[in-house]
Image (cartoon, rainbow, N blue to C red; front, side, top):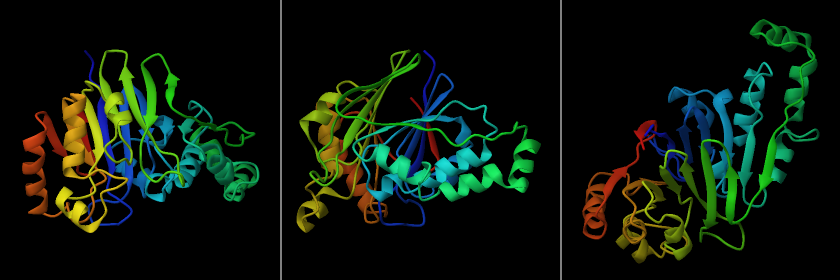
Length: 289
């Protein structure tokens, strides 16, 4: 069985800390690279992890809070800027707003259309493009973006993606969790932001890996009223245990649980509920699936 490789680019929340900020992940399957979410500084973190924007052919958004999508404009413009027109067309999937945001950023009248138009028409930009190996005329960016719901989202040669409803901040934003099944039989679940719920447990049944949000120590969350709409230590552990997940990777970690003491307590609490392997994610971590 060939391994799939998982890169944790963003392991944090909307609160910037020196070590974590926002959500973003890449999974490499048989050479194809799939990005899930595109939070703050994703494009830079991608390169720090040894990857390159032109190698990403798919993006799946869990939902459209800024800590999951704010670097999307940067990623699209970087991918276009560095291109010599030979990469695969980028395919983007996500809940409601995915098409609107894509068009709004980089479409013919998008808020950043001035950038790509300058690069297409200015002689200096044309020269840089030619020197890189491009052939004029340079074409406008073309992205295949699609709003998707629950069910089978994408089927390719090497992997299939299915989605389920994630209970987060409805009705204000639609949120999805994704399960990626590789041809070689590996399965990885990205919960996105969610409270413990049956739809995500069902999606994650017997998965090899589940990346689950873990905002804080469960007792703190229950005490300060921040438990609804998201997972803490015990919420994540219970979902993983009930789904029979082999490996639980905790992501979307808030500033409090990122501290020693709270972190170790959290591991202890999870251990009492969940019998599989637990990993607290660090940014730029690479994990074999």
